[in-house]
Image (cartoon, rainbow, N blue to C red):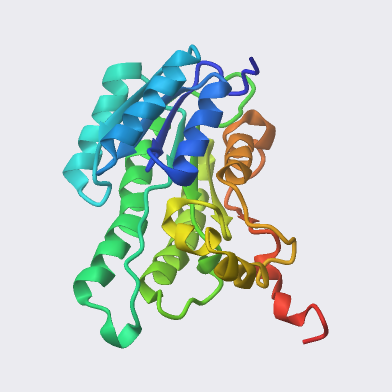
Length: 266
């Protein structure tokens, strides 16, 4: 078994499904001890823990709403109680509550911002507090890594999804600002911004032939992404192979951000 993350402890919020699930499994395969969070998908979370354990790895699942400060504090206490350490934080928990601007409720606006942006802030803050206390290692590589799972909609406007797009735009600046602040402490912070990925959140699109064909018009590379496409990059960013990378957003989108409408001169 490869061991790029051997003896490392990784916390993946939203790790019970989709991209978070893929990252948790990839990290475990590379030797990391895993903590995943879930809010409502307890059975799915337990299935991942069992899958990791059956492969000889270590994992636990913790119920937590990342938008609630007290639950985030309890989450980190659970991590330290179990593994006495933390090396990698992946913020992947997120949701959508879509509607037209004129019909969107304040409740739905706040809920998406609270989970997708405030949740990232709370988790990053707590991880940074711990990372700062760690001794620098002999070769001066990072003492901690924070990875935000964002979206191409941190730069692509999205009609009918103003709360979601605004939350991801906020993540972009949250990442850059925290990366700048934490770099002197040898803490790296980066974002991964996926495009269309086959997860349950958009299954009604990629599982429908007509809708899938329409979606592919936005993807120059000609296929819809898989969660493992994102997990592979998340592994690289968590490993020492990317040690000189911080404050960067990497797009995993098959070219969606290349303005495909201009591929024939516009």
